Each structure stands twice: as structure tokens, then as C-alpha cells.
Image 1 (cartoon, helix red, strand yellow):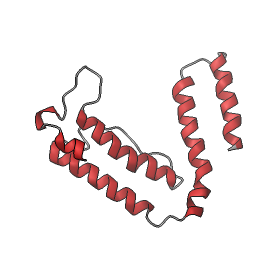
Image 2: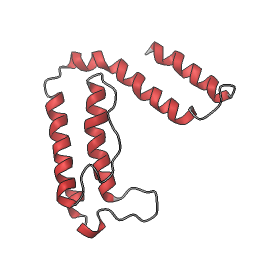
Image 3: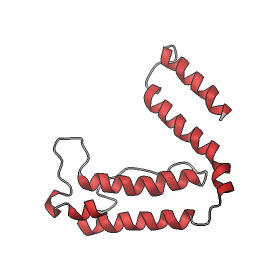
Image 4: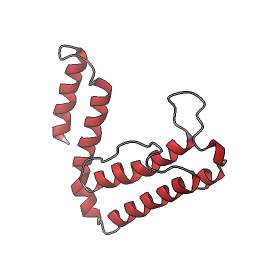
Length: 129
């Protein structure tokens, strides 16, 4: 939050090149990932993350407020968890996260490729978690 507050207002959505995150995007991404990915996964649910664009919050004060709200919601969702709750959900969270990584890295290859074999191997390993 201190870093975000130090960003000059006119630089919040500035990008050094096309297709890269601005400071505002980074702040929204961190906040939305905490709430919609990490908190949901800890509770055994799939990610609800849908991006980090200015439609979530625009303007310096609104981005700070968005970050604060996402953090409050995360704390509220997780505050009553006990260690046994975390252990129960851990295997599912690992499977979801690994599956996403495998699909992201190997998903664009054809079924006959060596990457398809890697996906099958990872699928077998996921069921062992």
C-alpha cells in the first residue's frame, strides 16, 4: 500500500510499452489475486479471478480502496479457519493450481505431441496428491 500511495497520480495507468501492466494493473492484480484466487482456493473453491483492468477500480483513491476492500474480504473469509481446515483443503488446492500450470504450459499442443504425454503424466500425478 505504501508503494502504491507513492506512485504519482499521472503515472498510475502509465505503461512503458504496449501490453505490459501499469502500476494500477499491478495493484489491482495483487488485490484481486489475493481475494479471488488465494482465498477461494484455501476454501476449496476454484479461482474467481477475471483480470485486473481499470473496470475494477480507476483513479488512485479507488485503486487503494479496492486493495483495502479485497484484503478485508480475504481476512473475513479466512479468519475462522483452523489448521485442520487448511489440511483438508490443501490437496484440492494443489491439484487446481498444478492443473492450471500444466494447461497453461502444455495446453496449446496437439494430442500426438510429447507435451500431450507430459499432460497425461501430470494428470496421473495430480490424482496421487
